[in-house]
Image (cartoon, rainbow, N blue to C red; front, side, top):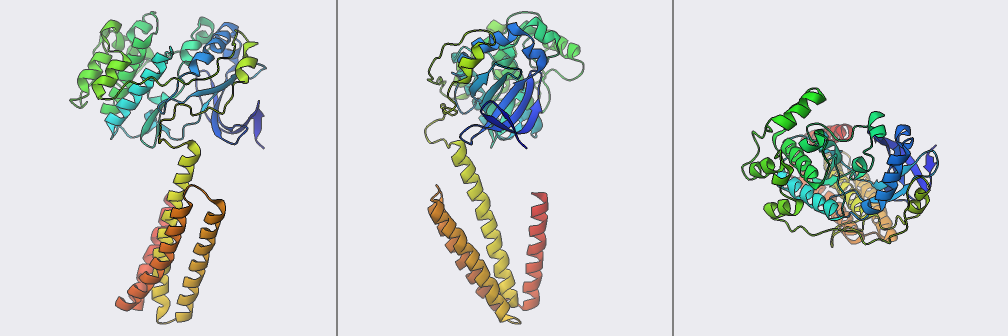
Length: 408
């Protein structure tokens, strides 16, 4: 039985971090969101919670396809939570590296930096685990949370504010975490994606932190067009690092600010402020979407249509093979197979016309092509191949289909 937290229906637990457990959830309109329920040791720190409540309004201004926007928050009750756009994919830390389309990753991360810094938000914990790869596009998650919850009591309670190896040297030495610190983390994250190695090695956190402060990063294997930029981003001196807009210019993309124009409700401090934040509308969960970019619903429908067409193509070939193999010895069976397949496809086309979805026309055309293709394939194959050969083809196609299903 699913659990409810405020207006959100929690579906499944996605993971956990230093600050809370993340759940896949549905909002009141049935859209998927990510709900981060804060850990008890975080909620027990009233100063950290008040700081997060104050900064949520600013965090909500960050928009764009390369950031997981903050949609809602509530700091009332025993289970304060933060709601962000749900990003379907895998973290950069879990995908094969070096990344194939490195330029796309670099430009996406640079645009995310611009969006955050123009809104006055510092991520502070940018690393491969906080970059989700969604159909090859990077999406930065958890921005602003580490910075907002950076307090002595929260850190002492077990939350790691930043990750050695991706945390800037000035922060490791007790200095402030500003936009330059994010640029360092950007460089380290991109270096990992380019080389397949952590730029400051592995081992105990203290050893990695020492290398960050005193050693040069390992950039061997980084492509020539990227290595100079990485070296500048990983400079020990924060003043020597480029700003986010400069990085975009170096990569050949326009640094256009992507601020979300939202109502600005009055947000106070402490637990009482959660009630105001909680009532911010979640309708605008993708306000940074560029012109021509698909919504989550449209993207899901497109994916379902792609899968359906693959099934149609496979079924067309398989039914054509079976019908052709049965034509000579069992013509009635061949006719029955073709009739059942045609009826199933006609019913599918009828559902498409009834639902009137975004891909209705293409779906009906694909169904018609499928029926015609199965009939044409059966006639052609029965004319050129013997029954045993066709039976062998059909058996091979069946085995391949079963293997595909099991691996999928």
